[in-house]
Image (cartoon, rainbow, N blue to C red; front, side):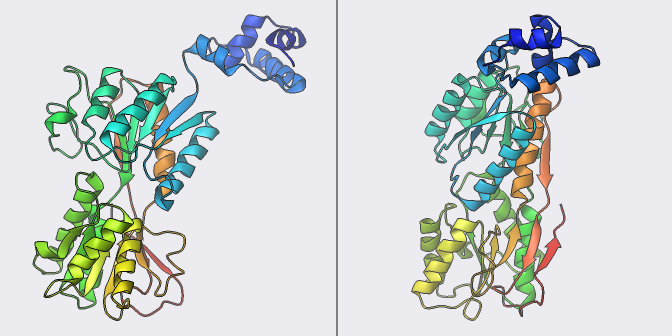
Length: 367
């Protein structure tokens, strides 16, 4: 196996120069750099990552903490993170916090102890311990999918104050970058689309309370009702806790009302499955007995009968942008925090009650 000494001898330079080329620790003349790179290629030299990390204080690794990795939405986010990381020469360490605040704190601590250069996290509904840990240890971190509000006294892009359990050490600036999809307007679009089909009782199966995605999609639901001139009826909103079994129970609750909804919006793909299961158990058809629109498109949504009208999130782009934000943070630790909101796409199919389209229609929604 070739060594750094072999590379230096082949390139006609010192071992220190080879180290500078590998670790970018000092400028090297272009011709010298090329000679070193050529020698590395010809000899098949593989750098010692552990030794390099001791020199640079960087491991070129990123910790990714995302719950429900089996969910197609998060799987695509993972693909975006992985592609973006590999393109920049970073490896991934992956953990599943299971949307549990205590477990979230543990897995993030474990990733940090592995000396990752930074982290990408989809935070839980109660991320107080997470924020305190990341702030206390100054861990470069990007939040994705779910935004977290800044602690009191720090600037927040939404202009809202955070709960007291989000506190980080006093005097520390809010430095968590965030990337997610638009939620409010796309959800409102689903509601107004159903209202345009003549529906006046439109239900919502909402996600886990406490998540920003849940709050924002409920806000979009209410905006859509108002835009259509429909009153908000709290009985038509039930929480499916962002998973299938709870969504089945929530849908059953809505269907049991004296005046049940004639149309339904489900706030993520897992809850769509639960809602469809509840409808099947009752022998109800979509859209004949109840029209359905869902937030989250997924690979087999076009294979259902009827085909599911949905909001498609830019999941891979969310993952790729999270990597970009993290690398920018590593390069410039003191720059202001940024929040990126990416637009979604309305995918028009037939579960809403519209006639089948000759071609699947994809309409952008305003961001």
